[in-house]
Amino acid sequence: MGVCPSARMALLRDNFTGLLHPWARPEVLTCTSWGAPIIWDGTFDPAVAQREALQQNLTIALTVFAVGRYLEKYLARFLETAEQHFMVGQRVVYYVFTERPDAVPRVALAPGRLLRVERVARERRWQDVSMQRMHTLHEALGGRLGREARFVFCMDVDQYFHGAFGPEALAESVAQLHSWHYRWPRWLLPYERDARSAAALAPGEGDFYYHAAVFGGSVAALRGLTAHCAQGQRRDRELGLEARWHDESHLNKFFWLHKPAKVLSPEFCWSPDIGSRAEIRRPRLLWAPKEYALLRD
Ligand code: UDP
Ligand code: MN
Image (cartoon, rainbow, N blue to C red):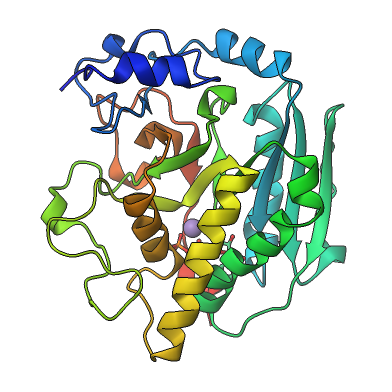
């Protein structure tokens, strides 16, 4: 695998890589067919990325939804570990979306970091909570969130930070390789296959299977992404359809049509249930235990 010829162009195009050694990881794919870097531990210099980001005086937003029992179960640890690892030293604004603003834990924030709470309605089905995020994010990006942030990461709450997640992850649009699927052949990937769905991918389509628990990019790129996904979900609902993996199916369709500018290796969002693997050196986010029976009605 190794580095494809267009990797150097991708390095030059990208502002926040600190990406110096894609060839430092010859055992994994470090570049997509369209020239976007796939960042693995050791392929970037976090100090360079940090300096580049500070020079641009960025504000970086991190959005997370915590509705129903997900709030008590996951939010405090997500935020506490984000303070230890997410964009440390940068200006950060958290956006927590919940139906119970009063129940949001008070987490001590470092200087230059603040937390905003936005009230959302509680959908009855967990699938709808998950899918409604695209519409809510779209609206938020058109409002204060979009005005105050230069880059935004949107994440699931059922995970916690375990290693540095810094500005090397920033780009115009960013997708996360799904830790359970990154080694699978393309034909096995769990894309939506019903051709009537807006999320459908035909046989032979699809680059990677991306995880909806982490995506990011500029405000403009994410406005486009969230509009696409929300619209696809609405269209499907009108036809009585629901894509196989909900918002994630639509996200995968979006990134097939609009290739991400940067791809995060599974090290950035790893499932400990998979066990240890040689190529997973330093996980940045870890999936929290699911315990769906306690969380989902
Ligand atoms: N979520 C929530 N309450 C719910 C269902 C979902 O807050 O009742 C949010 C939460 O941020 C969660 C995300 O939507 O992490 C996606 O749902 P989930 O993590 O259950 O999906 P999975 O990762 O299993 O696909
Ligand atoms: Mn999740």
